[in-house]
Image 1 (cartoon, rainbow, N blue to C red):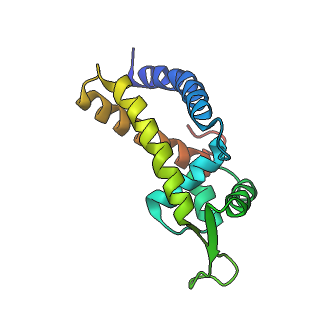
Image 2: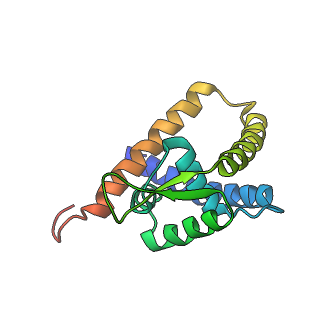
Length: 154
């Protein structure tokens, strides 16, 4: 089996990992007013700090309109707020409020606790290698989507 075929095996396993992790996150969010997509926005704001809606959308590989509606809901619930953007008058910066920061930290701590149990029988270097491969896939697939090969090119 060549490397491309091995990489295809990795991609084949991503869907069940995605589906199962989405179910686990959704179950953890049950009883809260945070949806799984909103959780992704809160995570981005927590990890990087103030961001514009288009910047969040680019990072999550989703539409700006979809992120805007999530941000509007997060603002309505008190998890985020808009601030002026010194770089761009019309594209405000979205910032976590203290309530948003606290909510995300609690959710994330619970997730890490679950993941620690799951990771108990894994080798840390294997996990680091997996992260490197997935980072490479995201980067290169992103390049492919942004610059698809022209007809006749492979």
